[in-house]
Length: 328
Image (cartoon, rainbow, N blue to C red):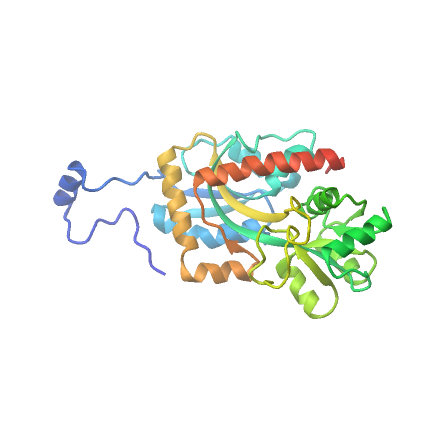
């Protein structure tokens, strides 16, 4: 894939002709970044935001005409790397790839060194990932409604596994329980692998899992998929209804990933980077790269992404308050 650098002049225009055209307003100079760009990933290598950052970095580098590198600054559930970006100069040289967990953290921790709404400039949402409500095969429920009825008949008796307190899977199930008006017992694990192992081992009844993680287990008969938490049906599981279709509107729970910079980034630079990201998302190979990671492209505008950040910050704060959840 070859993408022309912004610094390359239009073919056939010499330096003097190009200067005259610019002066006449025939071409508008692109807002530029003055130096190498670092995408901070506040999580360990191999995680969703890290994979996304490394996929988009070469394309963004070509578009900006600058080297783009990825720097993992993990720790404190993403708060260390996020604080670093919040304090960086708003010159476009320090960016950040985040999942939606960063809007959840301020509600889960007593002290968070950033404000997800005011400390950053949203640039572009890149992708989404669907979560699914699943149960082990011994649970006598084949729909989300049947699962809710079973839980309602046995308050607190059904366990559900998550990768840990305050994870999207935890908050997703807590939201479902609030909407369905049922009481479920949370069993947090240290990571996804042991949680899934106990689910397929029938030591816990249910879980919220990424759809691409759940589907192979469904195919092997190890779990049953009841519904997806996204607003629309998953393109990789089109026969599975959403929670809204299942009778639980407002129980939306999914994953999203986006690129942000420090507060105060120049709007022209934000618009340029947003256009660059959307161009990458439109590349024929990008959809397949994302699908291999269980994601779908989610091109939008900076304003739409900013609205998503604010909306999810408020929404998950309410879920955390009502459920009494803490990550500490």
